[in-house]
Length: 460
Image (cartoon, rainbow, N blue to C red):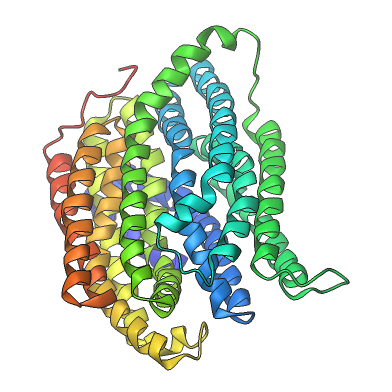
């Protein structure tokens, strides 16, 4: 996959000679470690699902339901980390090291505080929210216990997210890849011991997975601080307290609309998940399994989008808007080609991949249909991933948020409800999500090509 990405990048070198070839090389250098990092973190989720599927399908459904809930709160910690990575990238483009360091300091303080608030809320209201999601009575107790333990670790997830933003925006994407590798080993080992009760430990099932996830978060934070100290070489001082308020304001100004967009998506998906839950446990399990496979399809587009965002930030900080515009379009074309190709490969081999996760033929047959729906969805999802990240790098965050909220709730939720009511089931709900991606992709591409994002940099 990484080789395919490199070849595609090289193919697009004709956009501008040696300078563009260097930019392509930089995109590859930034993106391939992000690709591996996301792959490793995704494999953590796949391993959780696979190891739990050998334990029980009910455990898979419980953890899938809980993660749907926790996903909304994880998005909120991106208010800070999203703003941090954009503003540090722009500061580096302006060659202002002090400003970049101040944003790093402000991000760590703000997200640690955010993590404490979110963890408290999750722990107190987890059962009530799970009930609102129509969680089946057969799995709600398991889901509540899992949510409690993982909810405690939200504080560490928040700090880890900021650490990753600091490291990535300084161009050290290989470091976050190494951290992900360490976390993966810890996760698999912990799952094996605690899910199945090995080495004298009790058999904990889904609860064991939650403990492992939490311990991995702590390890990621420690590793992140070690690498920041050794590689990024940030020098915090008391004087940064004077600029803390203004820097946090800048971060929130950029990060809040992006987080609201993502939160709206997660909340809309939670509402849609309640329709799926009403279809029964088998529908939940199918959705979880297909979602795991779909992550492999989206992986390259996500890596390109995040690597491209850093580059766009550098361009914008240096006020090279033409270079930023070309860079964004090329990255988008690459992501569309790879995502569409991969979705076709997975759809053609749906039974093969699904059989690794379950032997329930009803789930496999339904899952195969959903993978073909994914062929329709993926090219438009790739556009949204790359271009929305690029707009964010240019500090243009309000327009994507507004379009997303209108489309998600008006199309994705609205059509999903209609599909559920009319008996189209899970296939109809997936098509509704695809229609949402299609409409948003048209809007954000128009925005990018018209250069409406230019000159929106906070410190322009």
